[in-house]
Image (tube, rainbow, N blue to C red; front, side):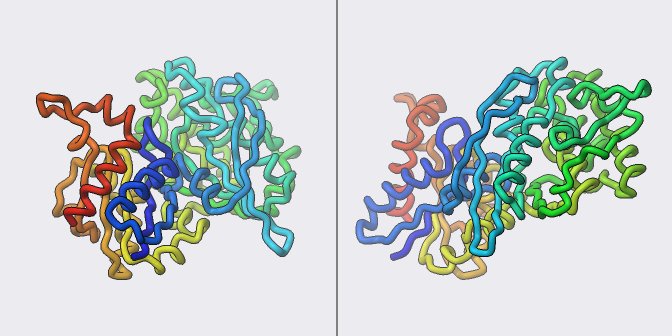
Length: 380
């Protein structure tokens, strides 16, 4: 039997690679002669970099400016081809993630994506011809303006001064100076992984929907939204492009500036990462797929990596088993996507009174994941 083990991360407890290892341990307890392939997956958000590295990309590290000016170390990955080109994978969260910032109203206005631009500059220096940008877990709501500022863009106020970094300053911009913008941006292909359809601004836009997660209170949300509206107007004047499109609101509107000044394309996160890492080839060789994530819920059913993988496996007639930290959807919901059996760690990690022990499940996720995988395989 050939088993493809392809989970997403178990957020807060296991990376996708760690989850795959634990699942493989459980699978081999039941099928000791099976050939297992561990293949971490991601949907274009956090974990995309890990998936690329697991697929053979070379990891690199740079010191960059974090989302509120404190320096951070950020990883990215590169794979060179035989023709002198290079594909690079960058996660916005590495340089400009919420993990690097306390979510307060003040910080929500100050947070910026400058460090992401520094990673892009490093990628260009390394000869990148394609840059994949994975979005998710971001701290900023600056429409990617900070990233382009690291690449030479200068947003100016009425006095002709460059405005401070951060989404809170975008409402003060009256002109965009592109005279120093890095010309290499026109020579590289940007592929931006998105898994939401939110526009840049408005009631369903970046500030209103995602700003509160980054610490924005009601006043900060309104100021950020006004800034994003103003920035979109300026980008339209400068380039003739309308950037208030579905998906542009991801990661604090990060795609917007790249849609204006480069030939960037928005792509579905799972399909992009699957193509990048060669998942299709491994899927075609499998007799069984085991997948999972920290929480398999209604949001998962909208196309998150494990469900998207299950759908792809169903096309090939390959049965899928899911193991997750918790599962809040029904077996019928999962069956519609070709998942024939499922288990959750909360059924294994229980107190003596039978109540699920969430803290224990998180702290000992690898142990319980191996056990739950073996149990669901024995019962499948």
